Image 1 (tube, rainbow, N blue to C red):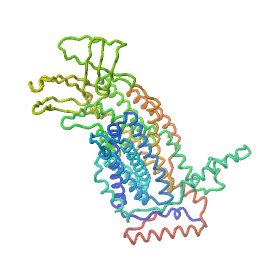
Image 2 (image 1 turned 90 degrees about the horizontal axis):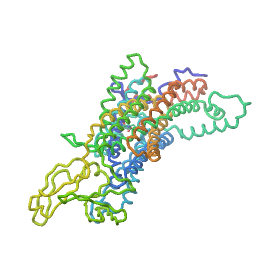
Image 3 (image 1 turned 135 degrees about the vertical axis):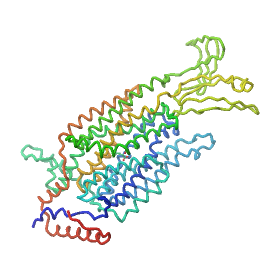
Image 4 (image 1 turned 90 degrees about the vertical axis):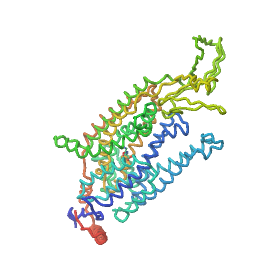
Length: 623
Ligand SMILES: NCC(=O)N[C@@H](CCC(N)=O)C(=O)O
């Protein structure tokens, strides 16, 4: 006996308590996400500068390791999805990997204490290998924790909604994104305390059981289809509609239909990493760019790494504006701004952001001195005489260069200078911002002057300095202060964040809506993988393409993204949106389930729903 479709789609979810049409349990999930992102972004914001100024790596190495870490964070979701779907379920996976995550943060924090190896107390670690090893271990644990839970949290959130709450489900992803960005705005300190919120909601969640090793079944099914296709490659065998249909002989039709849906979406994802390639350079190249700019906003001084907070601030304003104003307005104008179109426009915005970054870079370059390359040295000769001196450097003369001073022996004179400058001061800061006091025994004098950000000076201090109250100090400006203001980065942040709202929030919703029920976390992991690949591309392009000018690299990335967005728009044109639940029901109907199986399934669901009703006193609804 076949069962009518209405019976086949009896609510498969535990009924949850609602507030304003939303399941109450999602409150705990979004708060948890807020805390998790809080912790992740708090650490990530300072990471590139930690590499640069604590571990003393150069810009390129710091950028590369930063992107390798971000890539790892977005690769581990595959592992998280496997653990959740085939073993622990989403809830337990989130709990256990959060513990790994917290251990990683602690390890990372310990690695930054230079006193551990600073035996001579000179402020610099004596054993860099120790700090590097500890911080790498910390970063790996963090990547495992953050990445592992990420596909589970979004999918777990989606699982809380029932069929009649599809409108709320879409809003959930926007609110979820808002929480991500609200979290990234605040400090990491109270995160461990707040994270218990997730466990507090335990009784209210819809916890779907792991459905067996779904990833493994998918791989085996795909493998079989390929092998079977190869075995029947002769033209005497009739062609099949889809290559996955070659798995029909051995695998369930429902599984094949689900794999087809997932593969269709994954294929569409192929060009997407390029967006993240540009997007994640906010934390590396753009932060390093900010170190060569002035953060003096009058009322406050903005640090280069703090500039990244512009992104979450803009998200908090742009998500509601887009959701409540722009998208409905576009719809009212009769334009079909479908999810995939939004994502394409998002990519174009990101490309424009990089054009803006290139223009800012050109302005900065005008103000930078010519630093010597790795094969060159720079000599500075300071003339302390009141008359003009001619300096002749004979190519045959001995030239002695020391690391913190330069001695120049020429055919006529020997001069000593005190400066050795080959880059802008660290983090755009000067060692001294204002006033310094000179002391010698009982004598002292104070030199008063406001120094600009990122400037470098040489002071010539004569022995008479105490008798004229520091008046005789001569100041030589080796490097001009940063004159391009950090506010000029705001347009690029605005463009990339607008792009992000269109691309990333939509992508998150799209990945959930187009995934079959048992593969929601898998597709979330696939979506997050686009981010991982994006970061790997930064490593490759930045390493291989080593362009001499930073602005040229920005333009290269912008052009690549425009090209990729054109390819994506063509692929999107041929994509047909699906309702996975409908397709699954259709396949089930075509297959026909055994009556006993069907009855058992229905009874089990009804029993569960009844329990739930008694527990929470909520009304049972059948879809
Ligand atoms: N503003 C950055 C942000 O919100 N990032 C999100 C999305 C990342 C992604 N690949 O989907 C985050 O979860 O951190």
